[in-house]
Length: 159
Image (cartoon, rainbow, N blue to C red; front, side, top):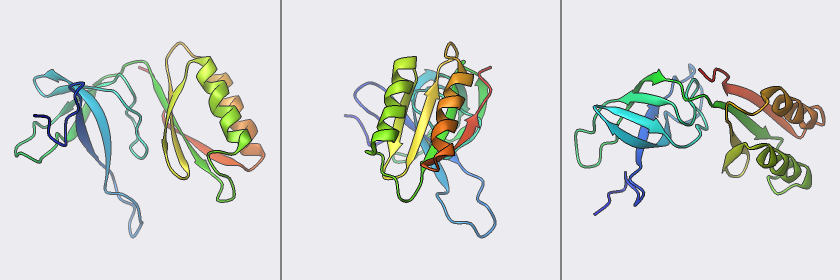
């Protein structure tokens, strides 16, 4: 029987501890779906919303779960998978269903990017290595210039 940490596809959730800013609010961990590869290695299968330096298809080393409810904890990225992660935060007055935001996301999908949404205001964007990241940045910056979003590089290194 699959536990809360597993899905029927054989993926597990990996806990990524975050460096908390002094006195800052926010989560203490990010959670990523990953494929177990054995020997404490996992291939990342989702986009981080808060963690830096890790992207989809990266191979990471994580502690093996010790207890029934304990999840593996990311220790290190041991092989970059060629993807980049960018993050988008929507202006408080803009919804993810806004036509301009949906148009941007559709254009990025056409290019070959994928995304995950943490409603109501965050989008984690996966940019595969074969995608022209300059074009992606230009599309994001155009909407940022309209003050609808802010965006950041969460993992700019594909390798």
